[in-house]
Image (tube, rainbow, N blue to C red; front, side, top):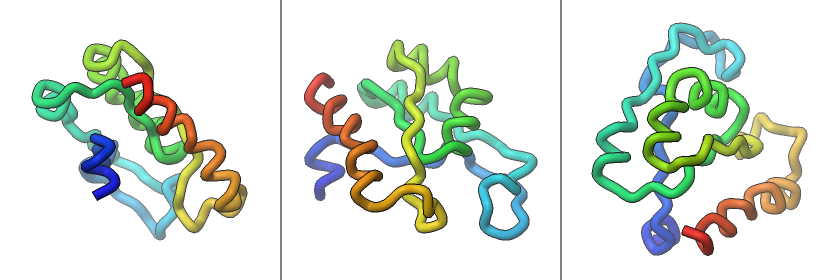
Length: 106
C-alpha cells in the first residue's frame, strides 16, 4: 500500500542472467530489462538503483532509456540486501531518504 500510495514502482534491472551462488558480483550474461513499456505508460520522474550491480546494469544497458524518460541519470543507492553488511539499518534509512525527496519534487 505504501508503494502504491506514493507512486513508487519496483522493477529488476536485469530480466535474466547466469550466476554462481548469490553474489551479484558473479552475474554474467546479463540480459537487461526492457523498460520502454513502463516509460511509455507511466510518468517516471527518477530511477534509483538498489545497489552497485543494479546501478552498473542501468549505466551500461539502460541509461539511454532512463535519460530519455526522466531527463536524469539513475541514482545509485546502497543495497538493501542482508548481504550488505557495510550499512546498518539506520545508515540505509539515511541514504535512502533521497527517495522521499524525489517524491516531494516529483
